[in-house]
Each structure stands twice: as structure tokens, then as C-alpha cells.
Length: 246
Ligand SMILES: *[C@@H]1O[C@H](CO)[C@@H](O)[C@H](O)[C@H]1NC(C)=O
Ligand SMILES: *[C@@H]1O[C@H](CO)[C@@H](O)[C@H](O)[C@H]1NC(C)=O
Ligand SMILES: *[C@@H]1O[C@H](CO)[C@@H](O)[C@H](O)[C@H]1NC(C)=O
Ligand SMILES: *[C@@H]1O[C@H](CO)[C@@H](O)[C@H](O)[C@H]1NC(C)=O
Image (tube, rainbow, N blue to C red; front, side, top):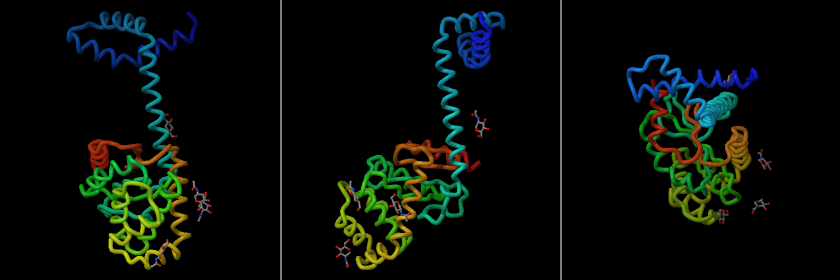
């Protein structure tokens, strides 16, 4: 046997010991070391492909998680930026950041979970309007931020109403939302005009961040050093928050 495959098998055997050991001891408590060694040799030679695959998957998962942590830490000033709208416990040092597009189905679907997470009162939650689904999404995002510059609290009303909206966004539906949440139409139009550059810059920055983090779509959430892509279960998010709390 040449050196490299031999080395590989040796590494595999050592690396898989805890897993296999666990599996074996699960079946019988009183095994001696020789017996385990023999079973291990046997198991590895019979299941070489499976062992290799499991180890590769584990290592891919670890290096993905590692790469994500590195990216988050590299961009942390842009991510945890409190000049963007936020809600929740503003004194908390656990910060979650949500990236969303008002036309995206999963963003709408996780609305109530995000609301719950904020209402738990343990985190500060920053909202990042990242419209990646075209011009109508962009319009809605601009409307949200124009509202933010009029009244920070009303931003949240706009945000949740826009997520509840079904169908395409148009100037008319956006003005409808604005009026429904008690913002004067004239004030809104003025804010759209007067804050146009700031709003565009904020949206551009959020979209650039989506690209730099290498995430393919919305929604995604960053909590501390972890990234949750798509519609993540509320319990998973709560578990992460509690981990950071300890
Ligand atoms: C994780 O990333 C750090 C920082 O770049 C690096 O030093 C370390 O070797 C990486 N670990 C793994 C398992 O890839
Ligand atoms: C989006 O809007 C821009 C400028 O308002 C326009 O040039 C572009 O054609 C529009 N794109 C689509 C797909 O409607
Ligand atoms: C606000 O702007 C919209 C176009 O986006 C226009 O239709 C509407 O008449 C304007 N409203 C006021 C009060 O100026
Ligand atoms: C935002 O991005 C758009 C499209 O890439 C670009 O045309 C525009 O100049 C940018 N605006 C600002 C304020 O950076």
C-alpha cells in the first residue's frame, strides 16, 4: 500500500473513533479495546465510502460556518450599523440584523416570528431594506425609509403593513399604506424627495452587503456571529439568542 492512502485511512480511523465507538458502545457496554479495534477495522473497510462521505460533509459544514463567521467579522461595522431602523431592546448587546425584500414570500412568512423574537425583549433588531426583486420592491423599500425619516416609530408600521401586502407594489398601493398608518401624503412626498440620496445610499449599502456576504437571496438574519438564511424556525433563533445571553 502506498503511503498516502495508508495515511488517509489512518486519519479516517482516528477521526471516526468517537463516532464509531459511540455506536458500538450503544450496542454493548462491555467491549474490550481489542474487540473495538477489530470491529473498527472491519467497519471502516466495509463502509469506506460512507465514512469518507460523512467526514467530508462534516468538514465542509465546518469550513462553511468558519467562512461565514469570518465574513461577518470582516463586515461587522457595516452590518451592526444603528443608523438603520431598529426596534426591540435597544440596550441589549445581542444584536440581530434582518435583510429582506417586501415582495419576497419567505420574508412575509417569517414576519410574525421576527415580531415574536423582538417582543421577547432580549435583542436589538436592525432592519435592512435590501430590495433585490426588482423595481416594485425598490419602490416599497424607498417608501419604508422615507417614512423612517418622518417618524422612526412609523417605520415599523410601514414595514409590517408592506409585508402583509399581497401583490405588486405601485405608487398607489404605497401611498395607501402611508395613509393607513397615519402619515400625511404631502409629508411623505417631501421626504421621498428631500431624502432621496440618503435613501438610495442606504439601500445600495444593504444590497452591497448582501453580495459581500455571499448570500443568494432574502430573507436572512444575522444574530451575533451566525447567519440564518431563509425561513428559520423561531426556536432555532431563540436558542441562538439564549446562547449569546450566557
Ligand atoms: C477558520 O478561520 C480562521 C481565520 O481566518 C483560520 O485561522 C482558521 O484556520 C479557520 N479554521 C478552519 C477549521 O478552517
Ligand atoms: C426599473 O426602473 C429603471 C429606472 O426607473 C428603469 O430604467 C428600468 O427599465 C426598470 N426595470 C424594469 C425591469 O422595469
Ligand atoms: C405624491 O406623489 C404621488 C406620486 O408618487 C402623486 O401621485 C401624488 O399626487 C402626490 N401627492 C401630493 C399630496 O402631492
Ligand atoms: C445606487 O446604485 C445605483 C445602481 O447601481 C446607482 O445608479 C446609484 O448611483 C447609486 N446611488 C448612490 C447614492 O450611491
